[in-house]
Structure formats: C-alpha cells, structure tokens
Image 1 (cartoon, rainbow, N blue to C red):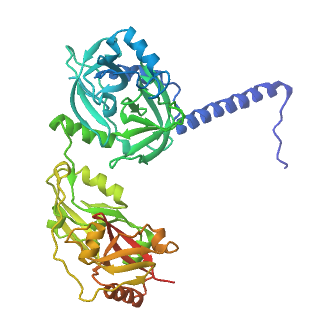
Image 2: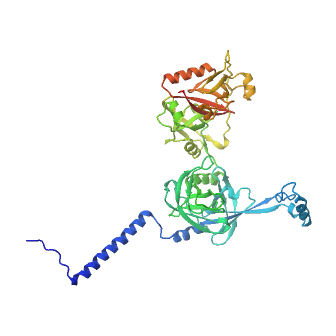
Image 3: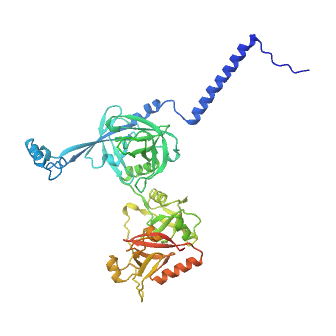
Length: 489
C-alpha cells in the first residue's frame, strides 16, 4: 500500500499558511530577543541615568592668583607695542596689578550619605574655595579631606542638613572589554551630562607608578575630570581622569582610574587624611628575554632586583640579582604589577616573598615599611683597589678598574667600586643597550667584579655553562640596572 501524500486543498491551504507564518514570526521575535540579551544591548539608558544622576556633582574651584605687573603675556618683551600696552594699562588704572580670582570646573560623585565626595586631585589642586553643585540645584561649600597625586584622586566633604543620595563602587576587575559603560559629569561647563560607550581596553598605564586605567570610548571632555564611569548596574568602576586628543576634544579615547585602585586610596584618605602604602625597599627592573637567558630562567617573568638598600627587604635577606616571582601568594608577571601589589598592601604586614636565586627558589618573610616615610640609605663599602690597574676592551666596552683618579674624574664617591666604562664602541650591542662612558660595572654573572680579570673569568664560566649572554649590573649616577650582553661574536 503506497503512503498517501498530505492533501492540501484550496479550503485548508490558507489556515495552514497562516499557521506557518505565525510560527516563523514567533521564532524570529524570540531569536532577536535572545540575540539582544546575549549582546547585553540596553534598550535605553534613561532609567539608569535617572536613578544615579542625583549622586553626580559639578565642582567649581576658586583660586587667588597674582596680578600682572605689566603687559607680559600680551606682547613679547621688547616688542614695539610694549609701550602702547603699558600706557593703555596705566590709563585704565592699576587693576591689572591686583590679585585676581581664577575659577575652574570639574566633576565628582557622592559616595556616602554624610557627604564624602570623590574627584580628581587636579580638579581642586591649589584651590582656595571649593563649591559643589548638586543635581537638584542646591550648592554647598566643600572642605578637602586629602589627596593622592600618584593616582590623581581627592576626597572632599560637605555638610548637608539631610542625607545625600550616593553611589557605590563596583569591582573594576570584573569589567570586560566590550561591556557597556556610562560617563557622567560637567563637560566644558555645560552642566550635568551623560555619555555612553564601551570598555575599550583594560589595565592601561599612562605615566604614574600606580596607574590602572580603564579605556573607554564614552565621550569624555574637559570638565568631565573627576566624574564617575558607571557599569550597567549603576556602580562606579572608574573615575574619569584623562583623554587622548590632538585638539583637546573627545576622539573616543578616554581613561578612567579603576575603582579597585580608587577605593583603597579613598579609604586611607578618609581614615588618615593621606595615603599609607606598603614599601618593600628594593630597586627592580623587568626580566627581558636576554636577562632570563643569562639567569637560566624558564620564562621572562617576575621582577629582577637590581639593588637592595637598607630597609625591609635587606632585613629579610633579599639580594641584588634575586628575581621576585611571588608576593603574598600572588604570582608576579612584571615590575608594574609588583609595585601596585606592594603599594596596596598594608604597612607593617609580614608577607612571604618567593625569589629565584641562582636557579633555586627561596621564600623570605618581609615586614613591609611605609613608602611615604622611606628614606633610602646606602651602606658605605670598603674600597678595594687592584694592585696592577689595567685597561682592556671586552664586549664592545673599554674597561678599567676604578682608581681614585677615575673616581674624581667621574664624580664618584670613595666607596664606589667595580669596572669603569671609559669608552663604548658605537657599533656594539652594548651601545645599543644604553651603556655609555662613565658607567660602572659592579657585577657580572651576579658576582662582584673589581678587575678586568674578574670579568674575563665570569665570561669563561658563562661560556663553559653554555650561556649565550652574560648579565652585568651597571650603575650610573648611583642608579643600578641589569644589562644582558651577548657572548657570541
């Protein structure tokens, strides 16, 4: 018996067609909804903006500046118009010579109902008076609680009769590239304004030691400084601080200091009126590929200790040449990360620091000092003068043991010891890596060198061990750094 085909007659064709069209439409609607949800595209920012706007403030600062004593700044000194402008100022009275008040604008946000406000340090720096304008239209004078120039963060305080509306900090480490964000503030003095964009990049560094910026394409202009960068939950994940622009306007490259940095600074400013950062007491540099090879490391990770002055690290037994690979249980990738972690660790805490020393790992217990109070001192060392000074060319360098005559010529202390670089071949790798006449080589292969023979011995040992490069500790003006030079011709 043959299977019968479904018979579609003129009578049932239309209902069937409508059924399939309805099914297809429903499928498309559900699919679009799921795709929109997957992308996280908000239908509107209006509800979020309405909810958090009352916590964002405009900041006006006022500073008394000295008046002009003449036509300086109007015409160049010696210009034929100088006398004309001086006569004009004299006719219009001495007001040009009087001190005058200068104003500046910025943004900020309230973080507690009792009136603590966060902004940028550069917004209020040097201000005599600080006035806060709230979204509802009233204004209050503010006092400065404390500032931190390293992160460009300032904490202000106002006294209000009623509890203020405020926002909370979010976890900036959870922000992902591509997430939606919203910036609020006072751009170009236009008052409360909202812009939206995405997180363009994470962990950007500009120029500071503790930089951890979120890059965003949300429009940020002058006047937005100190304002908040919100995630879609309405939590502050950054403080808008800087823009990259050839003309001073927004081109979609803005930077907000990450909230996980800001919160630690704000807590310390609120408690102490100043920052109190941890201090390890070492000079460090990144581990490059050639340095890693010279030290026999498996990878170019960690922070290479170039000097250990008197301080917490020296007391714990750390040495120049150690590579810090772990700090307080966190693996260290580079020097920037280590500086940030140490700075964010409380003063006086005893932490375990794992170092790689001569191919083996050692764990040191270091009690951190306070960076703001740290005074670097260098112990005097006994001068060692070779009996038969000699000069030789090695690795593109012309070297000579330090004598008192060379110390005087190079303006070095009596305690300085090592090999003086008296000339550098400009075609050599040493020149490419920044070595110059006047440098002093104090170690080779992590062993002190006082004579050219000492250096030759370290070169021979490195070659016998199959090393392709030799690690030198070089000092310039007292500042040390490691340089790896190739041993292959």
